[in-house]
Image (tube, rainbow, N blue to C red; front, top):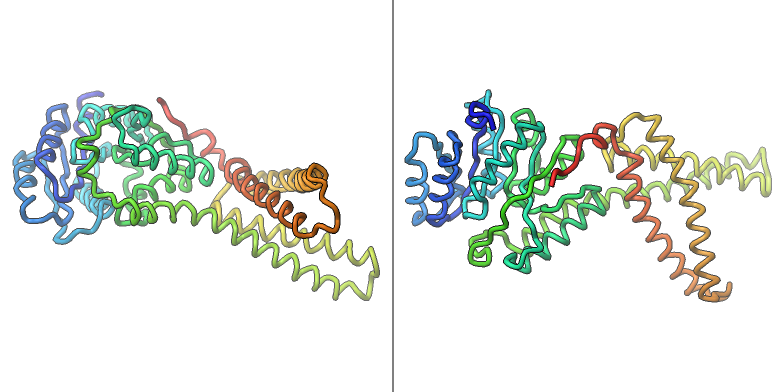
Length: 374
């Protein structure tokens, strides 16, 4: 990293009830060349205050304090806001945990990659290593799979707190919702929704005392994280249910309106076609502007949406009929037929969500701007 660029990148260290490891972390950051550290005391107990005072003895360290615990996300936002107001010409920040799990040289590597690529850079650990606690390994694998399936984001370390953020995105990411650990998850989702380019670099995998210093509560904080991700999928489910209800209502309405003009098969076909067309436009609109919130040029998204519709209808028919024949299901076995039909529709429902998220409603900038350099 060029000297003047390195000095303009500030290390942000949020901390709650630290040990002396916090002092070592701050000293390590200064030793590798960071000349600005913003340390945030997030409402720590009185017995921990001496560590903050010792870490802040250097004039290069700014100590900010929350009178009461507000959460890691709130602490990060406090630091970001202070930097925007007091160091507006900085090149960006690197967020670092104060418990010793982030090596200062890795923070420097993330800062270098950020400056070189103008991307948000995530420091990614190797979770296959034997020293990784089983709960951390399993948690990251589950969260990574959820991100990939429901959000279309391939992130190898979704739990990393080591993140380098260019100054140009700092204000925008400061407005992301969340006060505690869910803020970091929300930040990842915001990278996709707001088309902010991101990447990753490999870092050391450090767990001290089986990660006992972590303030992460496995049930409470996991729920806060997963509900944010799954909310995206549930919006899609709501869109589908609303469109299905509209299809049924429109069919009844069109059948009534066209009854004086058409009869029999012609009436049924016209009402079905009209209802399906209008309900599909409703579904497209909800998915574009409510569920996926974007998708590049309108015409391209619309063309891709209908290009997906026909294969999905064909797949529904082939899979359902194929399952009926394979299982030798007769017309009289209504319960079994309903079970098979429901299973097929569930698979296609998830498949359609993934394809729409990754292809139909993805922007051109997003397709070109994301990726990891590992």
